[in-house]
Length: 210
Image (cartoon, rainbow, N blue to C red; front, side, top):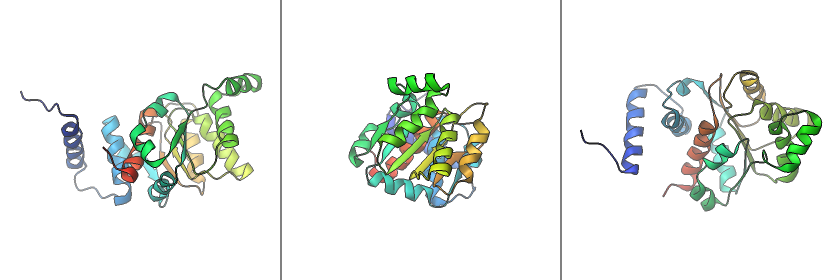
């Protein structure tokens, strides 16, 4: 048996297979690359139905990236999965405050999760444009929602795809209520790899890929 071993050929072939398996299904062309990249990352075609895009979310996210967005992730895994070369081309910077000693201390004092406290830290210290990329912690989404509703904070884009059980579905539904650009994986599925894949899809469309 002859195997494909060239990395570019492997990815190209993967996307060809994804297109074939999606068949005649119709999608908004603006969202299709995001959907395909998430399926490529997860091998899960449920995302063709689970991903929810607010109006012009992809275009708005790309515009923020063109303007050197600060990208906030809820995990170091999500941060590490975002393509560094594409970030550098656009002058974008990734941030993850989950391991900050200050965040850990405040979280311990308040009895809240570090993910929740890290959202406050990001809002306090970073300038817009700002994109939140959440793949693991629903409490980060809940705190983000509170800052938006109660304090008028307006991120440029929210990528909301935490995975799991407790608070997961409910926190995503909160984001879907907002008049803030968002890409949400409805239901229990998601993860840091999915979050990074969505961010990368936007980066590749904006900066190209070497």
